[in-house]
Amino acid sequence: MSKIQPQKPSSCICINVRRTSRAITKIYDQALEASGLKLTQFSLLMQIDAHGPLNISALARLTTLDRTTLVRNLKLMEAEGFIENTPTDNPRERQIGITEHGRWTIGQTLPHWKSVQRLIKKHVDPESLNALNNALTVLERLAAGGAEMAT
Image (cartoon, rainbow, N blue to C red; front, top):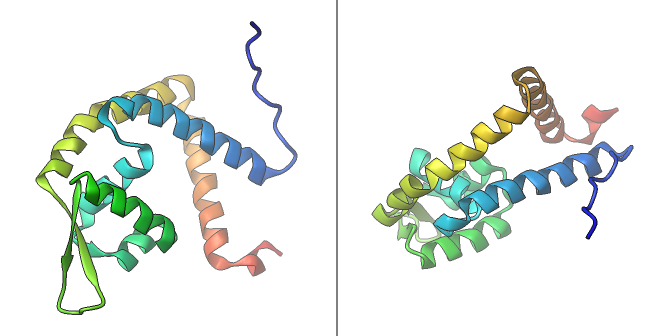
């Protein structure tokens, strides 16, 4: 059986970034599989633990996720007992906080996440990782500034 070869880079930067993003997410998801979490869930748990409790709007801004995607992920995480959704003084707003089970799960998952971090750093030199992180920051700023920055 022949091995599937990686595709050649596209002339479209967006396609290359999306394809790479999916590949990196797959590496993390495979490493985190034993914990029962996907990278997206682990990332959300880490953000909620570090900054919570907070409302959905604040969490959406913090994670740059659209509310629909965020709410879908939060419902699954609440059903698993990782987070809790509590009312606030404002009847239209709820706070998202991490549970003890969520903190325990972070502790169980963190070593797997760290192993992927080490793996990537082993295969990609520090200068390239730094350049990548800088480029991603510029692209995020460009997106935040709107299309007019692109011209």
